Length: 208
Image: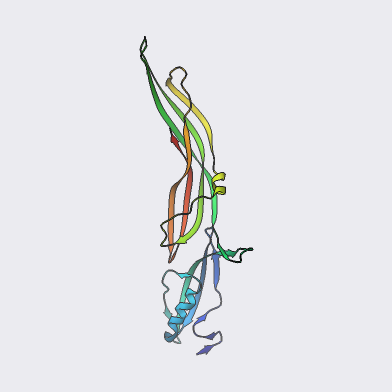
């Protein structure tokens, strides 16, 4: 049955598109269908991505079915060299946290005279936190690793060092730290077959 917009199902004018910092693309619109063309209406909506949530159908006065929907997909660009689609890795933000690290040491000298030394070293560090916003298939259990370039952005800087107690003669008065970049938080939001995720990596120290 033809209408001024064409044959059923019809995508009404007014479709909107939103791209989120994660690279997630949302298409919102309204499809009008007949009962007999519902399978085609479903295919039309799914052509824009993962339809989420399940659309609610409203019957109009003339008996048509009006179906507002939202569909989600990954935004991508085309590689200029290969011509293949390249999925958007999303965006990232770099922040900082203040962390306090400490360790207590003890050392005993047999003497004579016998003497015990006990001291604590406390260091305050400003460490980088890199938050990534991206998308993954909802079935994926893996998270993207930091690239070499992203890892090079992250650093840590000493703000203060304090020693309390009675250190042994010749003792090293600083902490021996081994730095790595670790996942400290993950959040996922589901949009059908696609999950939008935020992963935060932080410079983390192991006190040796």
